Image 1 (cartoon, rainbow, N blue to C red):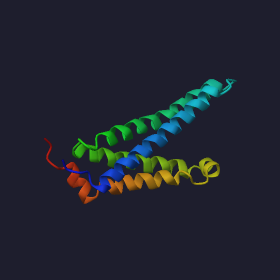
Image 2: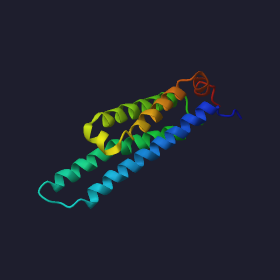
Image 3: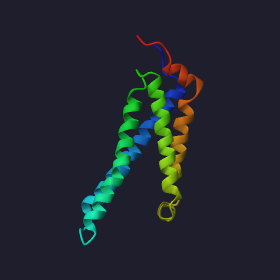
Length: 137
C-alpha cells in the first residue's frame, strides 16, 4: 500500500479544519437567528441570518466530503480542494473588506485567507498531483 505524502496529509487536515470552522460559523448564525427576539423587522433579520448560514454550511460540507475522498479520489478531488481553498480565500477577503467586520473581529478572518491559501498551495504541489494521478486498483 502506498503511503500518502505529507503535503497531501497537510492539505487534508487543513480541509477538515476549514470544514469545522465553517460548521461553527453556520451554527453561530443559526443560533443567533433562533434566539433573536422578533419585532417589527425580526422575521426579516431571522431570514437573513439563516440565508447567511447557508454558504458556510455548504462550504463545510464540501470541505469535509473532499477531505474524506483524499485516500481514494482522483484528479477531480484535487481540483475540488483547490476550488474550496479559493472559495475560502474569496469569502474571507470579502468579509475582511467590510468595515463592520474589521471593527468587530480585528482581522480574525485573515486566518481564513491563510488556510485557504495553504490548501491551494498544498493541493497544487507536484507530489500532490502525483498522488491523485496514481493508478487506481
